Image (tube, rainbow, N blue to C red):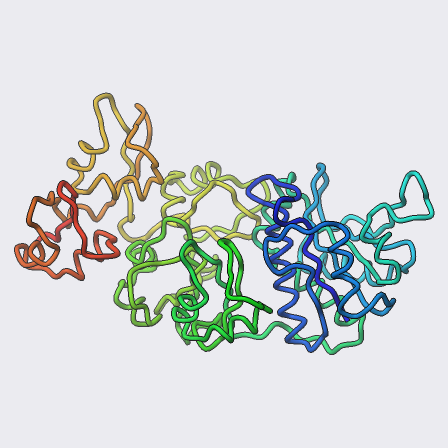
Length: 453
């Protein structure tokens, strides 16, 4: 018997820093663990499954209610730490022995996280009692606090963002083996999805070719209410984690479009749409796509790929491989300059680069630069992650190297995508593809890229 305890929630965010909010991470860690316990046949209960405000008394009540206040029921309290340390640590109650806590920390270490210690903490005013109320007030339950890392340590932040599910799986494995259950690796053929604004269970089920009831079952949902940022496990009847032969899985990142992804992997929008059974050009952050006909590059098979080492920065890598930071960002679809050890980076292109760089001079504007290089203001802002039209002298901009294959047309009153396509002997689908349009609506003054004949 096991309890998943996502602490904080609602009005209490827990620790916050470096794009990590503790209440959100502890909830998705607990939701992940709940789904794995279900797969392994281990009885479990959760104190909360949404962003809910709970009093201390209500939390303890929910811990004791499912299985009773008994010593053979385990409480796993998932946390993200703060305070300047580094690595995971596990705390166990004064009434318990360290075996479970030690097993959890060992498995988290095996999953790649640094580890600190297993320990107990006493109440200063009364050393016979536990410091934490969830240990004091849960009486007989075997209560363990798992701190997966420090959100104010940059190394831990990178590891948590990249590997939190591996650390959650490590805890699952330790608990399962401690309780005498047969442990097996996670099932393949499933995918996780991050809820976006406007999502409903019905729209998500439709997108992944599954049902609302199946999503609710997999995620232990008792209502149809979902929250932005919530992580859901999706049935393997839709896209899974094991791609068809000859393809890879790509996770959509902020700023991605089908056109940009197709260009990056030297394929076409149409091929991606067909392989993934997409019904529109709209993508969601966290969505997984099969990419046709490509494989993951390694240093052994392609010398243009570099594996990030300790101490590497984008600047030092760019200098080493005689390229620019801007090219590295573009070739690897990076949204920040943060790197992680072991990360693979494309460091050169044997073919014509996707982008060239331009240095802003006095008198430049996005409009004048776009006109000069046969592109659009919108495209320049998108590929350079610009949020305004303001430029500074000396600023470097990425310029699409394929712009010479297009000319710019400015939309006038009465234009439609169909009429423009007909005028320039192309198709509406092609105009949507090269302009990253998600629908056929146009606005007067909008600039469109038109294929050169």
